[in-house]
Every structure is written in C-alpha cells, then in structure tokens.
Image (cartoon, rainbow, N blue to C red; front, side):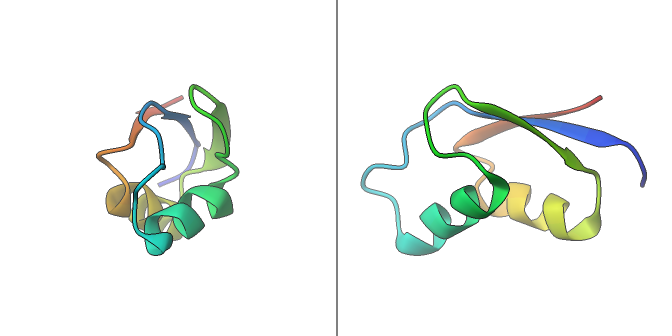
Length: 60
C-alpha cells in the first residue's frame, strides 16, 4: 500500500460531530474544495473511511 492519496473536501463540516472535524483537520482539510495529498497508509485510509461522506479520495 504505497503511493499517494489525493483527498478533497466536498461537503462542509458545519454541523458535523467534533470527531469528524478533528479527523478533517488532522488531514489538513480546513476549507471546502481544498485538496491535500497524503501517503497511502493504513492510518490515513482509516481517517478517510471515518469521513467518507464528506470527502472524495482517489489514488495517485
């Protein structure tokens, strides 16, 4: 599981539980339509899975 993931925030975190907000901030996503590239590791995959309804992730 090497490589990079391109993660984009596509839905607002307004009104979401604090746990979801912390996960998004931990990934570096603070504004809508912001994109970050992170290593494809099990921990990052878990973070994406927790907020999958708010983000779009694609392998790069």
